Figure 1 (cartoon, rainbow, N blue to C red):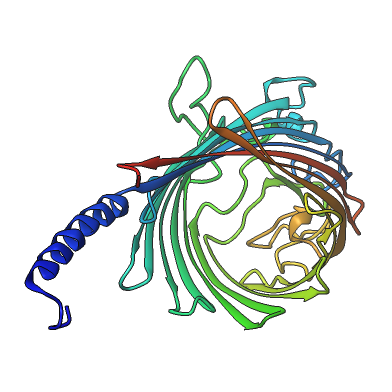
Figure 2: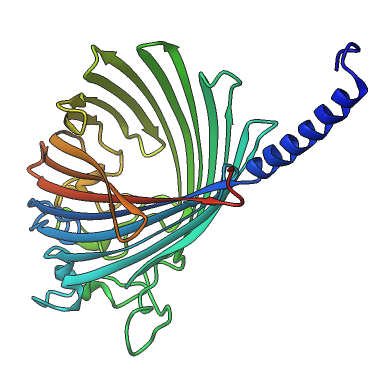
Length: 408
């Protein structure tokens, strides 16, 4: 205080400052928590005539119904928890051909998955650290992921760098969901090839290291770069895929026990006017199976009204075939590795889609607010004849709560 103030004034001011400090302290002790709930329902259907189960010929008809729920709880500005869970119900005419019995148990399968994680913000370092794990299980597959995420934001918020490291522990044995077993039993081969064990290995390990750099270029442009490195080893073949050779010989698909993948993605977001964002994306992919691929995608969200946004999207993909792929009855019996899975063939594909998002922010169920609803449709076509339709519906709500004493 200035010396010209009287002692009484000094005392009164000190007491007032002390009281105000106490009030401010009480106010700062408040914390704001937020819970976001997202419910996603997806439907996927496809048609084609190059099923790998029957050696590169036969129907690829498939339908998938996939409900999913994600709950994210931000306890405060530092701690965040999330959990994601869902079930994929799969009806497949192609996998029904594993044992040649129409409408057998293999025709309908279900995949249940769960992933949960926690992240913490270190404010001084502007660093967020997160961990997650979970499982994915179906009749002939169990996968356990373990991941660590690091993210750093620059002081001015114009740059963000993140790294994500994941390990997938996969077991390809059948039997966990069978009521007579409920434990992993064996690999499932095509019916006529069950006279011997084709593989002694039944596990697969995948190591993923993905990175991201987000950079604000100017007021209207943002750039992102996504380098990635993937290493897999173990059983990389699908044991119920058939391969037919010249001369009518038949074997189970066989691929190398190691695979390297090197993808690199680049995305540029440009604000065009006040209502349109142009999102352009390119991805390069290469692996040691001799597959090289290029992806180009353009998406243009358009704000029709303050609440309604429409997002048309177009995607083009070009892939060079794996050196281990040949079509039905084209492989030579002397070959060491072989597959007739058209996912590893040379093809071009395109996807056309349209999404609609509507923001509500209307209260329901007490203090929960219905935040938004989004509906997206996409058509997919591949040069080998495969075609597919995809529909997704997203419903999102949130709940914000203030903890601690309130400022009067």
